[in-house]
Amino acid sequence: MDIERKLQIARAQCLMDFPFFGHLLLSMPIKEDNSIPTFAVDGRFIYYNSEFIQTLSMDDLKFILMHETMHPAFFHLTRKGTRDHTIWNMGGDYVINRLLVDNNMKPPADVLLDEKYDKTWNTEMVYDDQIKNAKQITIQCLADMPSTGHFKELINQIRNPKVDWRDKLYTLATEPMRDEHSWRRPNRRFIGKDLYLPSITKIDGLRKIIFAVDTSGSMNTDLLIDAWSEIVSVVEDCDVDELIIMDVDTHVNHIRRFSKDDLPDALEVVGRGGTAFEPAFDWVIENDEDPAVLIYFTDLYGSFPQYEPDHPVIWVNYGMKDTLCPFGEVIDIE
Image 1 (tube, one colour):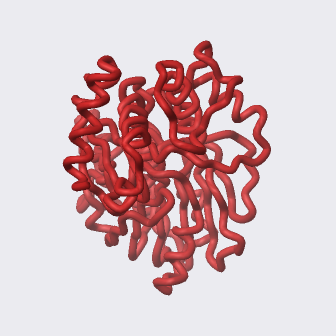
Image 2 (cartoon, rainbow, N blue to C red):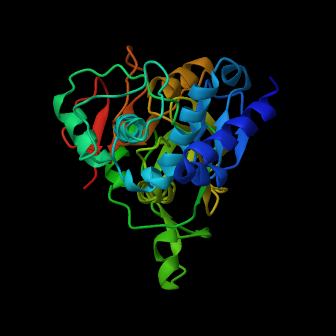
């Protein structure tokens, strides 16, 4: 059956058999996106893989479509806060699947269902229970995570940085310190107060810094603003020949290269998938980069590489404190 026709029939049957859920479904446009393995939702659209949708029975398709619709209906993307994106989605899946089954909908095989999580549980409660009791979690979600690239956000706010980068990066400098005032780039920390002051270059000799920004679902807008503020602070306090900024969730989504004089006034970040730290370090090796330091802005909810890189690493941690990392220095941000 033609995919468009299959979707039309599924939506019509949802509306007739389950009017409440069907009306919600009609408000969500559906788009093809073969970069995802199954289905995904980002709050505006439902996305599907064309090969996967052909494998589904009509009952399975109806259940999945109504399942995806309920994530934005429950404001799961905005309620998540700084929680781990994958486990939060699991919590949402348990709640949504229970709701749909209780309304006499037939679920596909292997969806997340547990008699323990009845209608008295909300997503926050399931999340806390999963975090409390799970030592190791093998996840089979109903494809509700936004696919890589569907999320873009322009970060153009600056806050007071929390880290003294002059002190932190001093030992990595290869040339003597200097103290120069430069009007080529106004000091961004004071622009919001209508004060245009020269920037001060305090550290010389850092050839290249790579900034890895965790753009997974658990890093919300406030945390991304804080990360951008720290990046700006590094540029102001240090004389760096080359800057690389990478957006990373489970993939390296975007790479930008700047010199010390052309850092933009805003940053467009791409991501909102899960979290894995391996891709950033693999990219450094594959592209034969040799940074003076890699600074990773993250909440540290992710998987680490099995090897220790040759270059220094600083983890700027916006998540749980005292998290153990297999290598590098951790700076906990309050």
